[in-house]
Length: 474
Image 1 (spheres, rainbow, N blue to C red):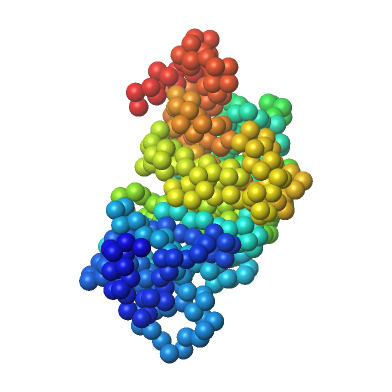
Image 2: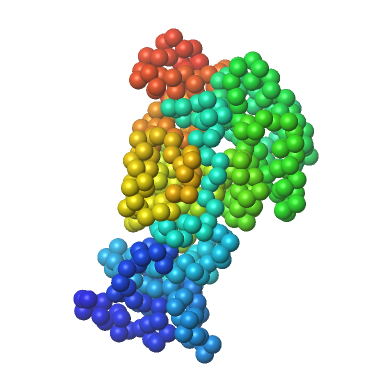
């Protein structure tokens, strides 16, 4: 240990010492959830003192040592085990036995990004990455119905699932909303979603919206001969209303696989996410991350990263979560943030900002685990009949400022096609209307699959040509 680190350790008071072990033998032995924070201390504390206070507040302690500690309670202390002074980073190990045994994700987050984000001893505190040991993954639900199941239903492979968000996001009647769905579907689109604030507004009653979407879907399927999917926002004021909406959709006559349940995961809460996962394991669970920017924006010094949010969504059982457009669309984000998050939830093994996460629930040195990783990297479907071996994938859902012209640029940045794209204004603002916008999107995708530049492909495809002219400089 260097003199600088020795001096930092010597500066700790007796309480802080109980939350620091810079020689922790093996943090990856399965006992700990690991986290890396960007930390700038506030007030009179040095970085290790501040880190110790954070470890205390996020596990067993408080600001002053208490007389009610026991020998066992001290084994539940979170431990600062590594520092990087140059990059202002601290590593903390959390005994995962701290957390509610019921696979309770909100309970974990209450610990590790709960009170600590409000502590006055910090100027900056952002959780950049987390690592879950296999022993912990065993305790949590993970996804049940995946994008692979949706692909089977739609009979769509080797390309993104092409979706839209109905726009305007609010103000259409139930019938007008269903008309937009119909136009997109008959134009060739696969997937339509409610926008995140849509609920039971007086001008668009929920039950009528559901009924009209069912009619529009039936008509579109009959005309196109292809299956379609609609994602309904079931977020509500209380548990009973949320379940009532789910049951309304389930009992409306939709074919299994043709609907998804959307939850505004941050504003509605993790309990809502996990309730839907457990009540409806055969339905695609669509996690919308409204309000995430308050925590995840890079310039915000307090909060957590997109990768952390996305990993916890997978742990909770979301089938898919919005992961950003990596700077290609209108939302804040870069490949270093958004693509790392997307890969972190869709692959069995992938590097994060600091940890390589393997979602295997068996030893990652086991030959079957190694084979699964290799199959996954080859983009083969895995975990169909051996789901005990690993936690299933969570699908990146991509929205915010994309249009048919930007489809290939995003695929190039994403480095795969295993995502759902939900273009809103990028479809509905097409000069020819929603149907033409959907056709342009399909044509842009066909051009990509055939390895043809969209400008060349557009010579024989009117809707794509109009899209290129309209969107190219927007």
